[in-house]
Image (tube, rainbow, N blue to C red):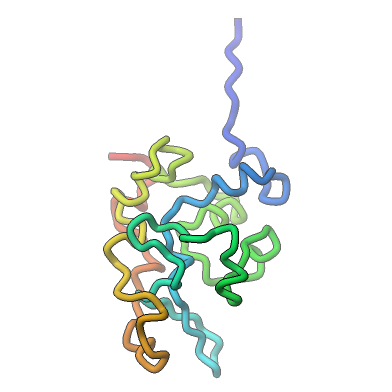
Length: 163
């Protein structure tokens, strides 16, 4: 008798092949993509801030109005396979980016761990790291909130397996 092992969908499908439920489940709930980003007019370089989108629940690390987010926040980027390939500001831990690059998910991703809290326990999420919401600060103060941590992974989170 041979045992049949089934690989998880993210290891066997491309982003283009995923159905809506699979696509939505790739979001790990870190909230990093919901941080305000600044773009240098001359170099087009992107800098992250510790300022959250006005719809970001900075403790739950999810959008407060996901179905209507683009109507409320016109510059909210809807991720599709095409936009994942086109934008260069997705955090290095982003499952959409990882899958597009042919890499596997980290141990703390809820699809791997089975627990939506592991993204927070691993220190990957924006929980307790957001200083303000975008509607709480004047635009001229945004530059004072530039941070690098969204582009890095905590050391323990970067391991492929749980310690």
